[in-house]
Image 1 (spheres, rainbow, N blue to C red):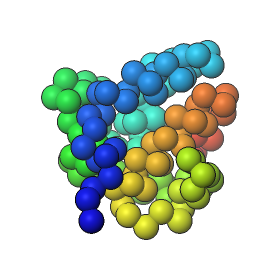
Image 2: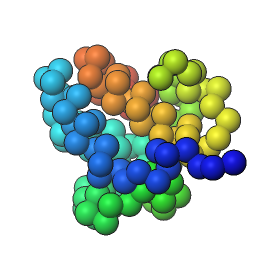
Image 3: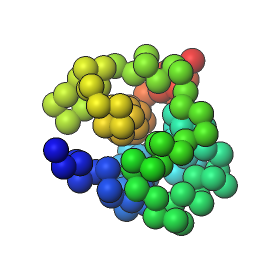
Image 4: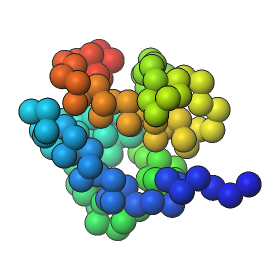
Length: 116
């Protein structure tokens, strides 16, 4: 079975859309970066390095310093699918990130987004 197209897309190609979605709703790039760091363990410098290298999504998550164990608390529907029901690990991580960015754009408080 062929890999889903999103796996081979660079994070850098989607990242501006995450930021634009957040900023359109009055949120900031810094909040997007904080969410990505919370989920993956990348610090700001490492995140910028991954974006510069045009790292694809599969590699981005595979090389993540420390996936947050609290990410399993992320529940809900994204792209018509319940994130907690996604079997494929990499796709689930991608959808976790999508869900967090969605919550940010919907005005949810950062403490709630970061499952504190």
